[in-house]
Length: 165
Image (cartoon, rainbow, N blue to C red; front, side):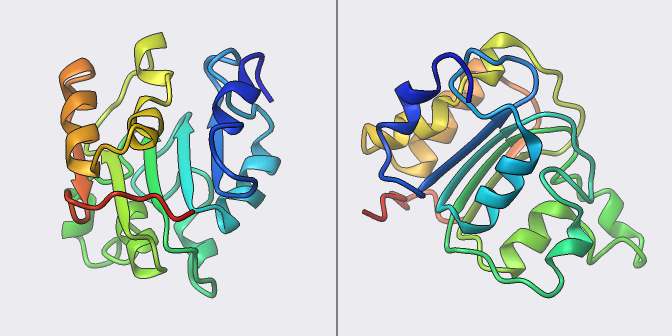
């Protein structure tokens, strides 16, 4: 876990939150991809900051085909995980990472429609911190998008307050 890892993890009950950041080990996230991959399957709230594409981020979309996920919220700072231009081609339509997560039980997904260049500001798990302040997904997404105005989308109910404990 990163230098500041206990800061954010201690704000969530055990097993609720998973966080991975390849770019900045001091934002309080795990830096071991395998640990994050395992906790991603079972947590209720996931923040991910690393490389991605239309069909993968933590895992490849095909790895989700025989698995159901917790009713969770996912925030990714990874390129193109919700790039619907790839879904126009019928051979890619089932592989779009954001949609595959929603099919498998995720309640809400925030992801990039295009390239999402990482910066220290973008790597901070701001949305999870805003959720802890009892903001709705829509409110948190609105604040985040004004700080980091890339082509991100929120797929899910913007009035949802994803606090499950």
